[in-house]
Image 1: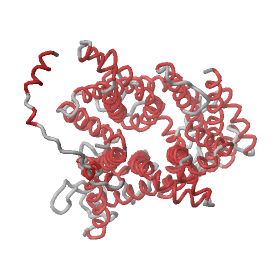
Image 2: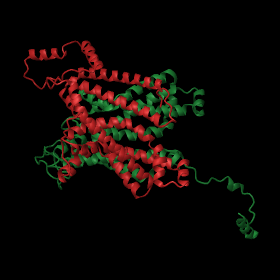
Image 3: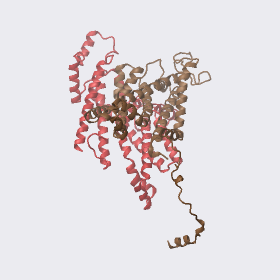
Image 4: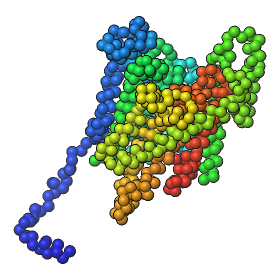
Length: 311
Length: 309
């Protein structure tokens, strides 16, 4: 201590000068102010994995849209070349009925993406509706609505889906119904949580005093503020719906025969594994890639939206 | 605590009742009959078979019988395999599924935590990237695809393990891994993020400051607190392992309960479908309850009040 003080004395005073007070600089903002969503986009774009996910999803979507349109083969056309290995004419080979796997993979992508996104949108609609009404109403109605959700979520989801599909006969619509029948509960819970934290804030009170209706409150105040959490839940619902679809197709409960689905292709490929391994590899790769990409985007969004991770 | 458990038991009963009822009515609506595959039946025999299983009664009598069956847990004879009762099928095949399930759970919890701890300890260094990549791959590759790939590369190409069947321990390694890998990835991710959160907290700094070694701190302090999210995952893990077994037992030709469940559905074997559904529902519902209770035992900060959590 004493040594330190001694050294301080040694520093000559003329190294310092008085600058006076600078009021204009005190009031200056240290950094440019950025809006919340701009910052979210900025943070999201710094996440390499998430950007990779976005790019992969764009490519998969574009190929799913255009390959079945422009390919010389159709997904159900039997070409007479059975179990051919990948070649210049058939990039991913052909299957046991002589169908081109490249076209079938992208036809399957259409179905998987369609089912995943539709199921997520239905979950979103029911979930936002249920969750916000329950959260806004409070009291007994809230209690009843949440107990219904509790009980529904206690029901083992895949058991119900499998039994439903038995009754509804495999197909696209039954699959979507089966996926969304219990899927919305999670979304409803998250929305309700957000509503509870938003509804007591002053601006909502102000809107109420000004005579805003419940519908107006939900659409103009609750949803925009809960958008982050909703968006993340939705992006993470899609991969699980895609997974469930391919899981069920694999069990033979998916979309029926001539239609290509990643799950059915993988299931058939698995049976021919020793003789024609490419029949499993290609659909397998694209299921995994798509699920991975959605998960990466969802995680990236969550991190970008988390104010705690702000730099 | 007791009040909470009673309340939860109430929910379980309601959920069970809903499942049982829904299954019954869905089966009533389902097209096809258990005897459809044997088409050359004279109508008299079919009528006799229907009478034997009570299928000719009006639905409310069938429903009542079925509820009684469920409460007494006696589902009667399989409609497909003559002379085999559903209960026998469950008691025969469940131990197999249980062995496989426990193996898969141990694998996913053990390796998941290990990967998570390694990733957190070497945060943003090579081991972190490696462990995180394994976790992400595990989450993204569906179990049935992994099963096929393992059958091809490990069992068929390299001939290290048997391709399928159920005749001993080495037959269970591949299927257990196939079921475990997704959950392993999730657990690794959970462990990593909660370890990272804990390692910047004061008590960890304190432990390090008083001179405890890196690993001692991890095992005595950080991990204990970091494992709480992993405990919550045990409920979904049980459900995942059970449903995973539906498909994995099919792929590896394992005579477990999951396989019976799936084949009973394609066979329209009503008694077996209902028996297995009720059995699975009970297991899953209680697994979630046990996890919730366990959670409050492990973390004294959590008080179980009502069902809100």
